[in-house]
Image 1 (cartoon, rainbow, N blue to C red):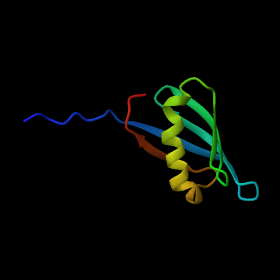
Image 2 (image 1 turned 90 degrees about the vertical axis):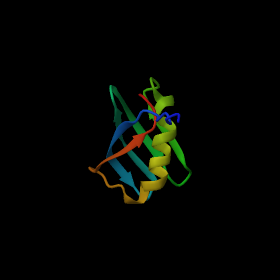
Image 3 (image 1 turned 180 degrees about the vertical axis):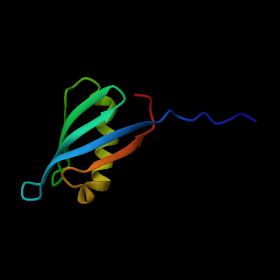
Length: 88
């Protein structure tokens, strides 16, 4: 029997630094392995911007899914994490 090959997993750590229900925006930082990014999530329009551009493609989709799933539960100063099924 052939064994199933599992994708590597990486844990991404998220810290929320600002949240505004009036403007529909959440800002924060995300870290995974040696990468660190700043993000802004405009949840009313579903727009995610991430800086710097280095490694952005690795985190954009997983972070977007995490924010869509969790945005109403996130609070400024809060630390969160999620698993990425890839090697970053």
